Length: 356
Ligand code: GLA
Image (tube, rainbow, N blue to C red; front, side, top):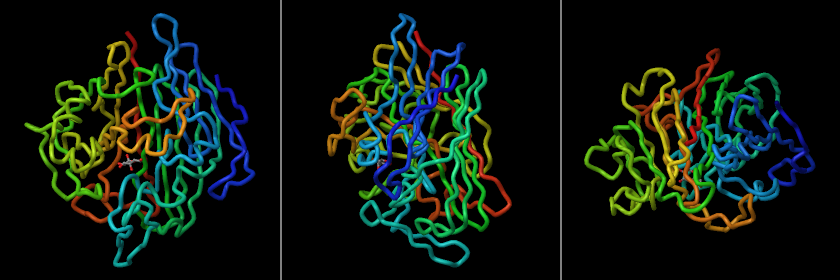
C-alpha cells in the first residue's frame, strides 16, 4: 500500500513555494514501513514492527520539511552527483578541468552547493505486494560544475522486511558519478550508537588526511581498530586511540569489500549491525565495492531537532553509505566512476531488517 500526503511547502534552495509530498509504503507481508519524501528523494523513516507489537523507528529523521531544508546532516537523502569529498573541489576528465563548488573547506562534499539532496523529484508510484516509488530528475549539463546532462533516478522498493534502493543514471557526455544514500540508522530507536555491534567482511579501508580526503593508501584492516570481520561494538573503534580514527574524529572512512573493486560486482551481503539489546538486526547487501562507515561525528553541531523533538546528538546515528571510493574523480587507480554516454549507471543496495 502507498499513501501519499502533502508534507510541506518548500522555502529554500531554489524550491520556494513548491509542494513536497511524503509517501508511506507498507505491505501486509512486511513488518517494515518506509516513509519517503520527494525533497532530496529522502527516507524520512523506516518503522519496524517488533515481535511484542511495538513499532521502532530505525533511522533518524527531522520533525518537518523546514528542518530538513536547514539542517546540514543529509538525513535520509540521495547524495550526488558524487558522494563524499572531491579533493580541491576539482577534477579533470579528457584533458579538461572541472571546478566544483567548495562547500567543505577547500573540498567539494556530496555534490556541492545544491546537490541531489536539495532537489524536489518527480515521483512515480507503483502499488503492489512490493510497493515502490521512483524519484527521478534531470541534472543539466554543468550543474554544480559537473559535465553532461544527467537523467537519474532512485527507486525505493519495499521487499520483504527490507528497503531496496535501485539507482540509475544516463548522461549525454562523459562524466563522473557516485550516488549513495545518507540515511542514519539507530537500531535502538535513539541514544548513542556505541553499543551497536558492527560486522563487515571489508578487509581494507582508506585512511584519510585531516580534511578527510583519502591519502591513496588501501590499508588492510587486520590488526587495526577497523577490523570488523568479527562483530565488534562501534565504541571499541571509537575509543581505540587509533591514529586514523583520531584524524577523522571518529569512523568516517571508506571500507573496501573483498574482491576486485575495478570490476562490476554482484549484489552480496557485506554488513550487518545488531542493536545494543540484540533485538533488531540490519543486514546490508550491495553491488558497490565499498561503504563509507560514518559514526555521526558531526551530528549535533548545531542541535537541529529530531522527529521526537529532541536535539540531534553527536554519534546518535551511523551511516552505511554504499559507494565507489571517495575522490575517485581524482584518483584513477581507485574505482572507475566515469559514465560514458549511451551507457547506464546502475547500482543496488538492500537494507533488510530481522527482529528477535
Ligand atoms: C559524510 C562524510 C562526513 C560528513 C557527513 C555529512 O558521511 O563522510 O565526513 O561530511 O557526510 O555530515
